[in-house]
Image 1: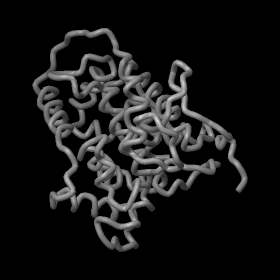
Image 2: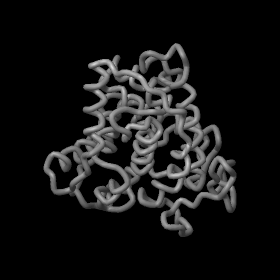
Image 3: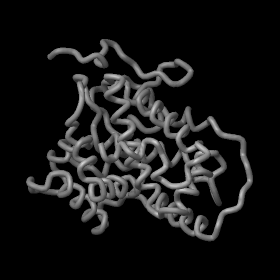
Image 4: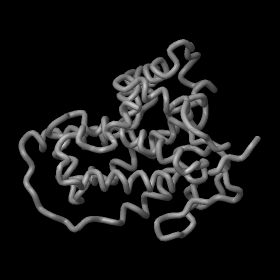
Length: 265
């Protein structure tokens, strides 16, 4: 097969300092199409150390209420024995492949969506139920954009692609860290503080921002002609761009983000 521009022989991930960042944890050479436990951790334990100077500020009652609800969502693990979690997985499949019947909650079919193996529940160990909620919200609210990314319908693509669902979990994890959402009672970094403005205007701001981040990553992927071994590099570039957009003075609503238009292209 012809090698795409981003399918470089011997390509490795590098962090912002130029050091090689393996895709696995602990340090192991990554095989093609690795899963969530391999991707989550290697990049963001490094990038999350970069913090903005702490600034104290006051939340409005609505910001406080919506932030608490969002932080509560972060605490919910994915549990494969919970009926509502099972139903959410089935709903995600039906939204992704409406004309294909799912044969079971554990089946090789899940690999077609980009899960690590036949049981998607094992991929949520690096993130919780919110990662599935993000994917399902995207599929229901922005179905055209969702399917375009799921089926990788656009652009000159590299030989080795990123697994869609696993990439989605990484994006959820990235946003949680970038916005400092696990810091209680409120974020202390500038992107997190500015995000609360968006949350006050739209209670679904985190889920919409997730879809924007996924679309940004997709555009970055194509622009870099990237292969899966460069996924962390692409995601770091996506994070940097999103942080810049969240720092713009005239950003007061989620629709004010320049990348918002990517949802409709």
